Image 1 (cartoon, rainbow, N blue to C red):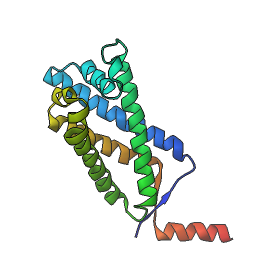
Image 2 (cartoon, rainbow, N blue to C red; image 1 turned 90 degrees about the vertical axis):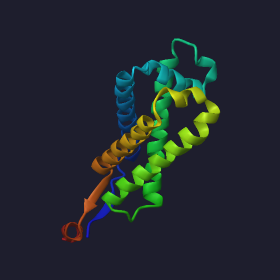
Image 3 (cartoon, rainbow, N blue to C red; image 1 turned 135 degrees about the vertical axis):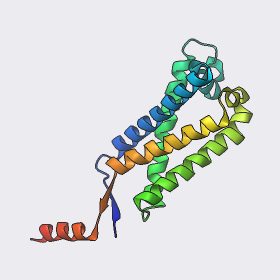
Image 4 (cartoon, rainbow, N blue to C red; image 1 turned 45 degrees about the vertical axis):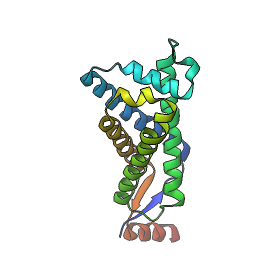
Length: 170
């Protein structure tokens, strides 16, 4: 049976990398989708900024601020996912963690697009089809899981763990 051990030596750095990579996956998907759907991607970023900082919505810096907000929230979400994995789901295998990431991000999407954004910034919810935004969250989850799987979680089989203990004891 494979178990996962946590490689916490570079934990904070891995969380930042996971957040940035996941956020980038979402930006690339939204950018490609916006191009196909003939939607101004800068308007999407502007509306992200307008949701958090309404006073800057009309500034020329708004799209850049929207990206900064997006990536900051991505790192926060990566930190939350890492903490949940460490505290709540330490017993889950790598496949179950992928399912957990997908479920968590589907929940984030539902809260954002069905509850918060219609109240905070209804314009934002109309820019792209809900299916596109849902896929963006699933891609975020996949990238998040991938970075954690590659850098943070070390699958260890009992044989390998015993061999390591034997080497330490001698």
